[in-house]
Image 1 (cartoon, helix red, strand yellow):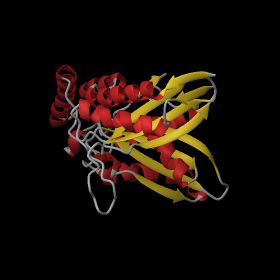
Image 2 (image 1 turned 90 degrees about the vertical axis):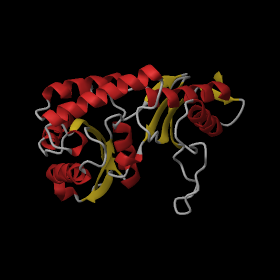
Image 3 (image 1 turned 30 degrees about the horizontal axis):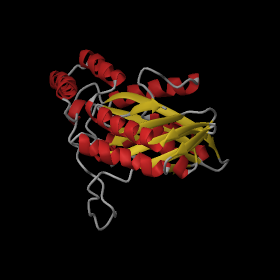
Image 4 (image 1 turned 120 degrees about the vertical axis):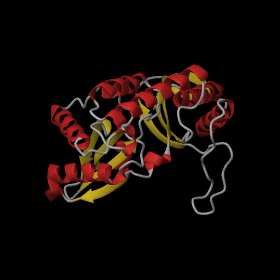
Length: 280
């Protein structure tokens, strides 16, 4: 049985929160560069160039890419042959967020009650999803999620008879109705199957898959490509000012579901869709 001290976990989360907010992931940076060449609108190209420059300055100056530094979502994959010592895992994760947002000079955006709206002052608590896996490691995926895009996400309990056409319509309609609000070009995370809550988690996790990696199932790989083309034909364009590039990618994750159900969730990520990972 391998052990890991909570101080190591806190240190890792602190670093991931800062890096995710400052350094744009390589796959997204490359997708923006590729999109700038493909964009047909002069205004759209200018916006994409500005987004690329903004990311470069953020990394060089060690500044947040966006002023909305998000509510932190953590996927923690805990090996069943590892023991956490020195404290509580969840406390360690939240302490990492607390320290990261303070040391990184990142905006605190979390309120302690959804209706009374008092800011917690340290961007905690994080939203944490746990899973038990084989092995003796702890893998942490940290995703600070801005709410300009989160607010444009949606979930629908379709009927099985709605089929793939109903799924496609719901996804495209969701992006269309979002318009400029989620700061396009967006990344579209889609979760299909499971239950209502499972579909939403799948959609969130889908945003973390690199844009250069399609679904391994050829059926869903083709569906991702079809949806991306349809979304980019909407004409929303960069910053919602018109153009060819509305989305950088569509990532679909699926899970078995009930014979009477077809849950579909769409979690939209903005053009900086932040996430960093580490295995301890």
